[in-house]
Length: 330
Ligand code: ADE
Ligand code: ZN
Image (cartoon, rainbow, N blue to C red; front, top):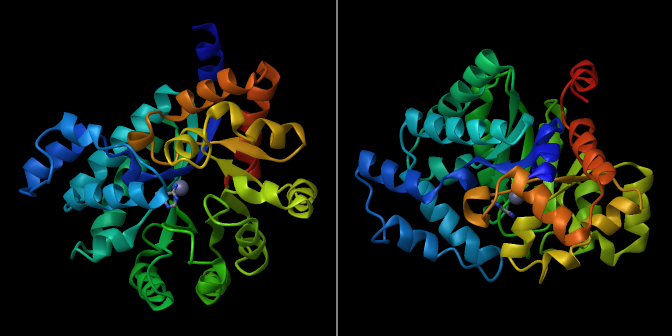
């Protein structure tokens, strides 16, 4: 359609994407066969049929199980390449990709294997098409502070080798009961090391977690942040300080953070002048990549073309690209 072509043609950055959340059921089955991993589902259809979530945790259980088929460098490469090609078809010019090394190292996959496979795909895509990408290594917040420190220590020897792609640090997994303050010291260390910082906050957790992610973790962007609306003073601060929110509409719908897309607050927050961006989170699980997230939001919330263009521009401005490349792309 015309609207689809319009949104596809807007240069866009994807800022909130978990690479393990791009594993389509077909690829899960293919990798399981290749690696001799047993799956508790009879078929691709049976697995896809299980994607009926009631909250964040009900999704995370399947998401971590799905990632268990990733063992070799080329598994990580194949997964990342499939995503990058799909994103490029949607008009994504730059992707900031989160990955969860703890999901893999706990199964005996070396840290190096994870980095090598994902980085090879990012570099190949950059060198052959000009599409850029970078990595945000994310800590699982349901695990301990010590586990996060150990993960950082295991990854730091690889930093120089992956300096062209490893840009920052994220925080994901079950939010409730795992507040930002649990990772205050790890984030302080990451900040000293010069990493760019983001964290999930205000997805299922309260607005106070958004405030704490800003004040205690010193993040530059908030992943989700939709529950900030419960606190008008926080909304004012997000607007005045131009702190980007990486909102994921189809994710919020699938995980019952909102009852329907018409009720999503992203349009209201955008119209209040916040730096809102649209992203896909875990597109293989939530039924749509970036373009579908834009189109579903446009339809449900009557977003104008001007608003859609603003959302796309916001994504480039909120990215961690150097200023000169942002100028080129906008
Ligand atoms: N890991 C993958 N997707 C996530 C989400 N939406 N929230 C928290 N952790 C996640
Ligand atoms: Zn997320």
